[in-house]
Amino acid sequence: MTVLLIGGLFLFLLLGIPVAFAMLLTSIIYLLVHGNIPLIVVAQQVSVGTDKYLLLAIPFFFLAAELMGTGGIIARMVRFATLVVGPVRGGLGHMNVLANMIMAGMSGSAVADAAGIGKLAIEIMRRGGYDLGFAAAITGAASTIGPIIPPSIPMVIYGGIAGVSVGRLFLGGIVPGILMGIFLMVAVHRIAVRRGYPKEPWVGLRAVLVEFWRSLPVLVLPVIILGGILSGVFTPTESSVVAAAYAFLVGTFLLRQLSLRDVGPILVKVATETGRLMLIVASGTLFAWILAREAVPQALAQAFLSVSREPWAVLLMINVLLLLLGCIMDAVAILVVLVPVLTPLTGAVGIDPVHFGLVMVLNLMIGLITPPVGMVMFVIMSITGIPVEVFAREALPFIIALICVLMLITYVPSLVLFVPNLVMGGG
Amino acid sequence: MRPAPRWLALIDRVADGLLAASLLVAVTCILVQVVCRYGFGRPITWLDELAVLDFAWLIFLGAAVAQRTDSHVAMDTLVQALPDRPRRVLYLLRCAAMLAVLGLLFAKGIELTSRMASIDYPAMGISRGFLYAALPTTIPLFAYYLVSSARRALDGRRA
Image 1 (cartoon, rainbow over the protein chains, first blue to last red):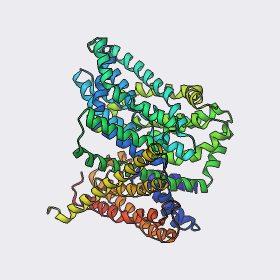
Image 2 (cartoon, rainbow over the protein chains, first blue to last red):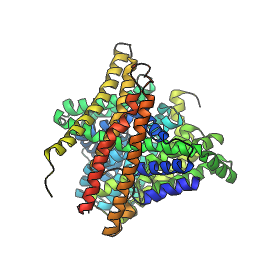
Image 3 (tube, chains in turn brown, blue):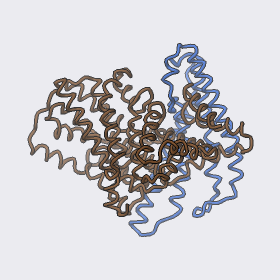
């Protein structure tokens, strides 16, 4: 029966049936074959999958990102980052990484960051004399920092399913996110030296400080979001709404780029995006429920544990499994279906759920830029029009850099757990 | 190809309007909640319930509208590589499969709504049926957009 479930799902995905429907269709066929479970659970699980207060943060984080793009906040971040890191070799490549790191503190979605920063940053790099493939690859790779540095939509989903504190998960992402930035910059540096990419002129400390001062209203947003959640003032859902409201105010009154006329189309776009993503979450809820009924989590745990009971080996196996799955499947679907399958296993060998959450989310973010299926890769390809093999070739060094970070946080858990334990106590 | 009748364009506009409104309602609920809790120290419990109920409608309406541009996440790299004819046949099969799923969700959604109608939300005091009704109510719109996609493919206008 398990073979039928997994095989059916992949067959339908291969035939091009949308992810949500592939999961629904497989589930329905399973229920028909099984015969003893009334089909009403289909409607019930799908409806219940949406009935979660925490997940309300998802449309609000999307909304904040969209308002920041239209409101000129992204343009300001790109300009600020250019002034700061532009003057080193391959400066605009570093600018791309830094702008994504700053944006990551306000947005929680890699796809939204790739679309928002991508258009602007790629155009600037192209005009600055960089290869289009390089610009595309670094934009895609850097956007994966978005959901690691808090806030983060995938971590909200993980926290909701695994029952782990979203505040802890958010804090756990700070160090790994900075590491990703550093490793990507090292990769950019090596390529820039080899290819002789240019430097941007240094404008002087004064000009940088002026730009910093001007950007300050934007730069405090991450502090509001994180501070609000951690001090217990806001729930994650509330903080996401406050972020959206703040982005709206800054875009409208401070940067004066946003008008009320823009808001209608933005609302429709964000709600459509939410419908698309949450339909996968809702359908995945049903599919995960069926996997649990078939005792797949126990079977998988047994298979893994029969190889080794060592946490490091279990983590290695899970990482390889997720990297492979991430190449061919949608990250959100993997998250919804596999978190309930994997967490009993990792719990059994004593892996901290916050640590595992970071490992899993970072792993799946790498899947966003690996061919043949990667949502960020698709966004970048549609912006630049470059073919998949060029993207894959240019992205390879960055993918390797990100896998190094993944290995680092997998085997040095304190890189993840130090900050949440420091701020929120416990261990 | 005749231009689409006016009332068909109206469907799009009403759907967009309702969708935007549903997001605005959710934002307003949570913002008012923030103000009430920290401004006045008195949270209004039914606001959170209303926001989550509204969220369900937002999701299923948004999913239906996403079908208008046929933009549901699919792994169709392989299918895209096929020659024109088999690709179009596969696309029509895909639409048929989706339509079958929608039909089942519609029927079971109605059944579920009537079964849950007697259970109330604790704070709002209204029927939980309003939550379960979101799925079957929005499915006709989803199906309409799906059939439009299929017809476009039949006409050969979808490259």
